[in-house]
Amino acid sequence: MLFAYMFVDVMSPLQSLIETQRGWSPESFGYYAGAEYIFNVLGFLILAGIILDKMGVRFTGTLSASLMVGGALIKLYAVSNMFEGTGLESWLDSWWTSMPGSAKLAAFGFMIFGCGCEMAGITVSKAIAKWFNGKEMALAMGLEMAIARIGVFAIFSISPRLADWMGTPTVVIPIAFCSALLCIGLLCFIAFSFMDRAYDAETGTSKNSGAETAEEEFKVSDVAKIFSSQLFWIVALLCVLYYSAIFPFQRYAANMLQCNLDLDATQAADIFRWFPIGAAILTPFLGYFLDRKGKGATMLIFGAVLMIVCHLTFALVLPSVPSTAIAFSAIVVLGISFSLVPAALWPSVPKIMEARYLGSAYSLIFWVQNVGLCLFPILIGQVLQASNPGITDPLKYNYTVPMLVFASLGVLALGFGIWLKILDARNHYGLELPNINPTKEEGIMTSEGMTME
Ligand SMILES: NCCCC[C@H](NC(=O)[C@@H](N)CCCCN)C(=O)O
Image (cartoon, rainbow, N blue to C red; front, side, top):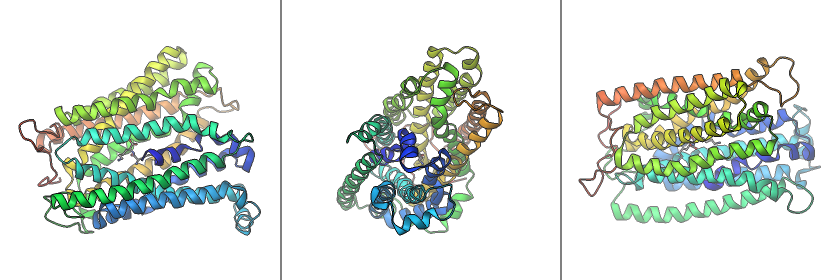
């Protein structure tokens, strides 16, 4: 996942370079960036969950890592000199002419990569739930997310340097570097598959269930069962609302800080980088806390409240009091929020969904989330434009209305968090309980016997 998250953002700091080198307009870059989610939103993620529950983590993990490598290689070819002057380029250039052929092919590669990346995300979650059932599951998930966040932080520093490495700046080297890392990731997953096989032999785990105790095998009709679950929709809507106010915000955050504080791009990035790093540092500790003390639903509520406070600060306080200290504090608090919610959300899913369809449950939550991640950057772009009529200088935007939209997403997420906590208190799903039972050697919180609403 480290290498996957690095690949996702390898082009983010190179937008101006690809524009000058390959003639991509900002609009083409936007289409390319959104392509990651297209196949997933069109239904691939639903299929991915079924494959995961039917075929198990070893097959699905290897398939997802291979898809990432395949997609990365297509993108590498698209931006390389080898693609220039080919018949494929001429054909791709001949339609939708505002989007260069290289951008179209790179976007296609990114779509394939995106399928692999999200499929890997659900596979890793199911594998962790299987390996750490009743043990330090939230800590393990927290560490996995922390490593991924460090990858995002690292690639923002590495990518521009790799691009300049050979003297003449080029996007090919950073993408080739990350593609090589993805090949190493594939090898790591193949190595994990052998370990997982040995683990199954040791524990007698069925390959598809992912849990020693699951008696029934996954059926495709389970997907309908998940969709008809009230609990699933509460979690999925909380997830899409929360993450839509985080990842799309990430795209605009540096510009928002620049506009409010009159900073250059580096100064704005220097403030913003504490967001992923803060989350990377805190998430494992909160996972550790969740394993031992519980309070998952409370953490979700608290995380949403912090996010609302931060976005309201960016919307209403920063424009009238343009203080770096306020901006920095809000970014740090948002980092705390981005630790609380992911640390509590993902380890809570195995508590409310049965192990045999856990892969599908994760994939359907990701699917709903991907719809939001695909649409909200576009919506925020439109809101920004509509609320700044006549503004042509990109450093003079007023971000109050877009930030209020993000804050309202937080309010809705908070509502779902409170609803989840009420249902948990009523129906005893165990969301507030620790994963590890201190009175037993093995933990108590398994998904066996958990019923859905
Ligand atoms: N084992 C993975 C847990 C989910 C982590 C979560 N990631 C997502 O929700 C992805 N579906 C979306 C990532 C989008 C990045 N471009 C996270 O908190 O990162």
